[in-house]
Each structure stands twice: as C-alpha cells, then as structure tokens.
Length: 300
Image (cartoon, rainbow, N blue to C red; front, side, top):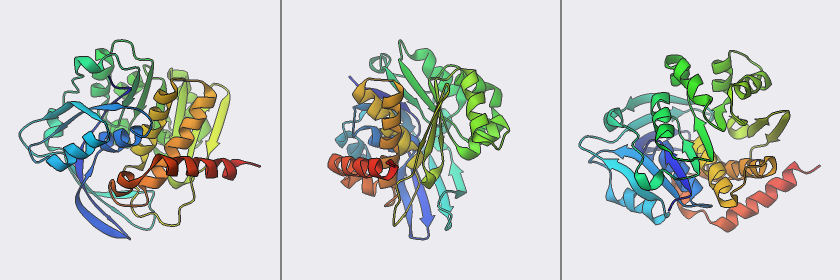
C-alpha cells in the first residue's frame, strides 16, 4: 500500500553547468519527486521507460521503498533531455529533448494505486493528467505541476484540469505567462478563482510562495555556498511537500506551510550535487537539522 502516487517521467539527462557535466544521468520528474517523497512516506510511480533503462537504476528506486508496480517498460529508448546552465542557475537552456517511449505513455494507473489519497501530477500533458484523475477512486489531495510548453499549446485543457486539483504548482515565469500578469499576487488570485485551495509559486533559489484564500506565506530559499546542478529541484520540492503531507495526513494551513519548508529543504540538498548523487547520501537527521536552521532564518 502506497501513501503517495506520483505520475511523471523517468529519463536520462545530459547536464552541463559551470561545475561539470554528466551524460545520461538518471533524471525525470517522477524520479526526483518519488525519491524526495520517500524521506517521509511510501511513494508509487506511474511512468514509462525503454529497454535501455538500466537495472541499477530500477534497483536504486526500489531501495528507496518506491513501488514500481506502475512502471511500464517497452521496446525503444527511454525519454532523454539535455540542458546547459550558465551562471544563472535558475534557468536551463534546453539543448535537446528526445521523447522516445514517452510518446506511448498512456498514464494507466494500476488497480492497487487507485485508492491512494495523496497524488502528485508532475509536469506532463494536461490530457494525461486528466486521464489519471478519472482513474482515481477517492483522492483527498491532488497537486499538479505544469510548464510553459503546455501553457502555450494546451492552455484550455490546462485550465480545465486546474479546476479539479487542490494545489496548483508553478514557477514564477509560468504563473505570469498563464495569467498574463507581471504581478504574482494577481496570478495567484486568478488561479484560486479556478478552484484550487492553494497555489504555490516556486522562485528557484529564492524560495516559494504559498497562497490560499486571504492568506500568504513566503518561504525563503536555503542559502547554499555551492549549487552544482539545480536539475530536478522543482520536482524534489513537490515530492518533499506531498510526502510530508501524507506523513502527517493533514491538509490545514499550518501543515502546508511546514510542507513548503520541507520541500524547499529537500530541493536545496538536491542542488548540491549532480543528478541524485546528494539525495543518495542524504539522511533524515540532515533534513531535520536544516529545518531547524530554516526556523532560525525566518525568526524575527
């Protein structure tokens, strides 16, 4: 029995930053989010990979107690992405995107996952996100992510799916684009009118904003001396966020604020190394230590 259902991508990333380069490193939204959630809860993923998906990577995910019942492997190559970061580590320049087996992804949710209460719809086609919701029996809390590509190409479908979720998660650029405003408060207010109970706007290394009806929480980013690779940090944030909520099994304002902090902390650790290197050595005691530091940072 899983606590959190995560639908997204598993892929191989080729990433270059001012601090080095990795070729065909394990990545993808479902990968980062599920590993992040595993520090608090037991996640299960729905994703697709090709025949080149390495057994060592399957074992890595399994070692984190992530259920792979919903991982489909078919002929062909696994989704691959390549990007380069300059000294502005908040923005990656995409160099290639090879959808490969992702073109055949149907987002089928296994029967044993359909009663899951907490669901994260990672960045993917809004049509697939809707298909997932239609297969769920009694979800209690659904979080969705998106990106500028879907805002530009499937805006009407995206607006429809937003009406069916509890939390809309976007970065600041996406929020401005979707709601055609430079003001993030106005963007959040427009999003809340569509139906979500909460809106989270990620601001990269500068933290995240949580909006609800008449309330606003500003979580700062954790100050890092070295940021080697921010790839996957947004998904780590989401995974840590929903993983903590599932652990507490609460959805009140105070718990969501803590979840935002835990999500930010997991993301900060992820940025310290390439791919999952830092996540593989991360301990729960390190997370709690940084949580205490964050409380001190925010106290005045």
